[in-house]
Image (cartoon, rainbow, N blue to C red; front, side, top):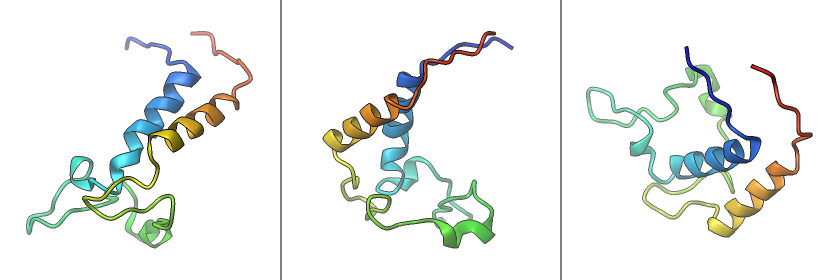
Length: 91
């Protein structure tokens, strides 16, 4: 297996940008069942679905705008990037 290193900064940004549209455009992330219904959170055991927080800033109406705009996402990324102590694991 070939490995590669992702910087904490790139990881923080990628995580925020990828996860952001999950609530407003779930069809891009989740499969549909045989009846065509979206199987949102199919990667989470059913018993935990009730624990999903759909309140602000996590939720959003399907087809609407994400709860966090670009400026807010940039703020979250900047904050996450302050949480690193510079540790790098040796391969």
